[in-house]
Image (cartoon, rainbow, N blue to C red):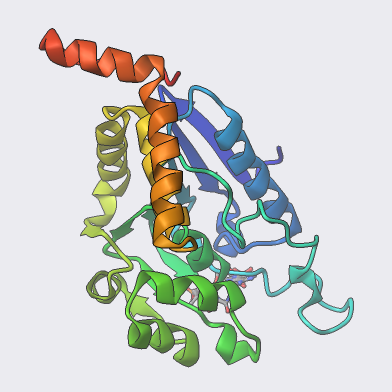
Amino acid sequence: MADTVLYERSGHVATITYNRPDALNAVNGALRRDLNAAFARFREEEEAWVGIVTGAGRAFCAGADLRDGQGSTGEFAGTFWEKPTLNSFESGWEIHKPVIAAVNGHCLGYGLTLVTWCDFVLASDRASFGYPEVRLGIPAIVGAIRLPKRIAWADAMELLLTGDRVDAERARQMGLVWRVVAHDDLMDEARTLADRLVAGAPLAQRAMKEVASRAGDLSSLDAIRFGETMRSVVVATADAAEGMRAAAERRSPRWEGR
Ligand code: COA
């Protein structure tokens, strides 16, 4: 993996960092490839239970790199470096481990697209959010798919159709941001939340997140059937036995993720 995205794991917490600070972490071809590789590693790594994604420098991510691909066809060609796949940041990876976005600054375009896939959005009081695409004459398609599922219609349309940036507090009022914190406390707050999540049984968490993500696309009956199947799988795991044993013995459980 090149240095445009960093991957570090401490205990059960993996931190993925956009790392092109001189370009405000704009997404060029290399960064897109490295970002997808970092999340693939997070998905595969047994010891990684919770993810934090953040940006190096003063921005989270300023969206697509507006310089990348210039001159090739003259039509923003640089954004289409590879064919979209079901496991890319645009489509949302098939990852059911909890992920926290620690938004340290501007979070625009593709940056916001990634954030709308995360479970928790912790924002620095310096953060801003927006889809500038409409000002460039192009649509933010994944934003148009994902944002109205997450926040109220008019708030989603405000972001998508005006291209205006909103500050962290306004994004919190919209329900996009979970909590706004002082800039200097952002990563400590993210790690504290990650530690709270690590205290929960990882396989039970993943089952609930997968049921929560899929249920909306299923009929009620299918959602219940799917959920019951997931339950029967998870209750048969070593962690479920450990959780019940620890409760009976009045001690903290020791999760193994199996
Ligand atoms: N692609 C490529 N480079 C970018 C970039 C992008 N999307 N966004 C910022 N940069 C670069 C700037 O060109 C500048 O580089 P330089 O120092 O070599 O000139 C550097 O990052 C700092 O950006 P700057 O514009 O000077 O910072 P700012 O604080 O004044 O403004 C933004 C910050 C985010 C408001 C502004 O950079 C911006 O509007 N960026 C474009 C956002 C956008 O339209 N993204 C595409 C969405 S599809």
